Length: 107
Image 1 (tube, one colour):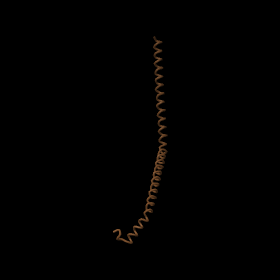
Image 2: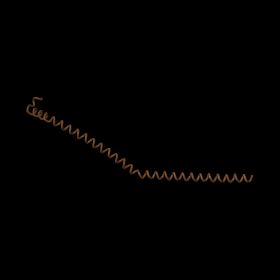
Image 3: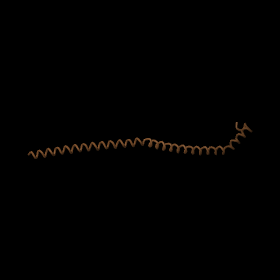
Image 4: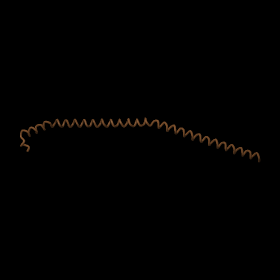
């Protein structure tokens, strides 16, 4: 019986050691995961200026493209209006001369 009790006590001591080792290993894993998470957070925070600069660069490129497109449309419209004005210039001059020569005709 003493031998059985001794084996039970030895087994209980060994089980407590295993449980303590498992707790210690779990704590090491948790601490390692926390360190890794902090390192990832630090890397991300270090990249924030780069991410911001990339966003600003893309926004400026889109704005520049929009400005160029608007300028092109403006130039095209200006050209159309200039052509229309030139096409009607002679008509306007003829009408003005007619009005100056004979104001009663259009009264």
